[in-house]
Image 1 (tube, rainbow, N blue to C red):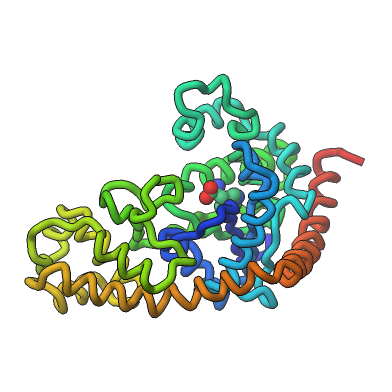
Image 2: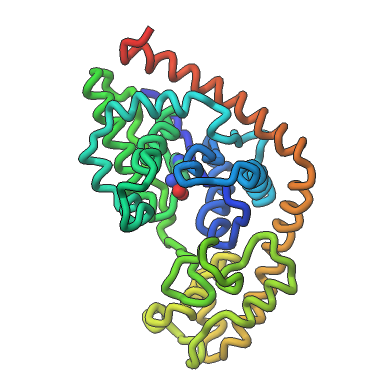
Length: 334
Ligand code: TRP
């Protein structure tokens, strides 16, 4: 087996990328580009496991692509494309559906959460979604997969599928066992209205999140309104960890300015939240507004975005086909 390191990750196309997507995923994707070969995919086939309005889906695919590039992903050196344009994802997913076990899928906690109380009514696609995710990764023999902690179980499943494929067909080490890259200091970016809930596009209140497309006024307003508690900023992390809203705002500030949390506490301990909020708004306006402006500019130029995806798909397809040829042969397909 070659010891080449290949990074693969996927982001579902949603119209409104927010600060949680940026700090939790995209910022990490950008820094990996310097170290390894990277493939970043807008996973539109994953999106349709729950119903999507076709017109909105199309524009969301392009907007997510714009978000990738505005955040600093380099479409010249990394591969940026949308999943459905490389048919190998669907083909390998089918083969892996036949390797993966019903018992394994039944243990996936995200399906249980997403399907809700009436599992009989969930799409079959939603149920086998983790097999498609394994196909995404293994199609390129990716070795490293940057994801949030909520995807760890899916990466473990991908490893199990890779291992079983290698065993069943007696092709030792054909598929590398992918490693999740979960940032050690997992910064979970939480809702600005409730420090115990993840920042999410599905929370009703716009005040719960900072969207990458927010302008400076919106950012300042949202941070002003962000929930806090009534104590001054604590001096140490033990105290901070007991206060979800304070922890969230300090974490965001620390991540944005690349300053360790301990250092931020040193600077701010004993001060009140107005001080933190002023600094935080400034940092957000400085980092996020330029990204938002880029996104807004790019989504007006559909042709430009489509060109980037086309070029990315061509590059991805070459790699995919090379691996698929071997996979078909191993499985016994002619
Ligand atoms: N399931 C991931 C999510 O919802 C997205 C995804 C699809 C992905 N395929 C992937 C992530 C492959 C990493 C690797 O966030």
